[in-house]
Length: 273
Image (cartoon, rainbow, N blue to C red; front, side, top):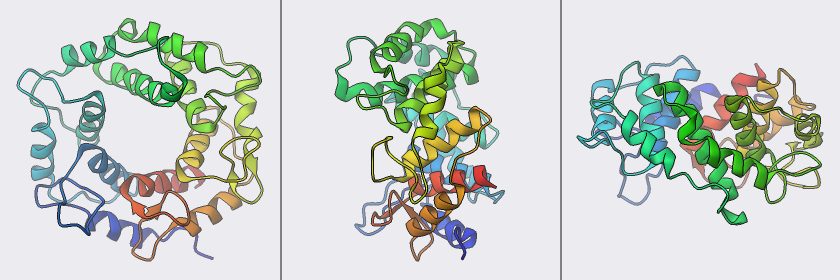
């Protein structure tokens, strides 16, 4: 059984490139507009698969135009994806982003976050940690917010989140590593608590379902710990169920294909092989 059809996946990714060089996953409504996240997912996927990225001059121009003359971006999310894609393409923005990034990081909420925003808070803090490393920004700009989030979201039995889950726990692991914080035995064991012989990875230790982001987060966490998942064959079968006939992958076996889920599927496949 073929669990991952690479050529179909590449064809799907390339079919989502727009005239301006950027990418967007939707195609049915006649309002296609390139965006920074989808462009990152497409470029990162092609890079993982050692494929050429077409229209690079137009693509770089599109990414650079997302930045204002002051070096700022409309949001931390756009900054993260635009800058990450430019790095993948081996180039830089037109303007130094460091001062603007520091301002975004200083506004990062921490202890004041209500529980239903812990997931986005951990994700944004992890992006700040990544950008700090890439652009030589001191962790002091975001450290206090990150430490407050880690304290709020921690489950004494292991894992992070309102209900401990692999996605929040993965972002917490990235923050702990970036800050040099100790990682407990329970936190390290948490990801194996989510192993499942049928699903591959569960959304929580007591869950009976999974999705692409959960599986990707757990696999990345295993990789960072130099560990292996308990049921790699089940993970491959999950990937197979999520690939559509046009080549893209959905978040689950009944979800539409997106560039984000396709990037996660490509990353999972490469981690397993």
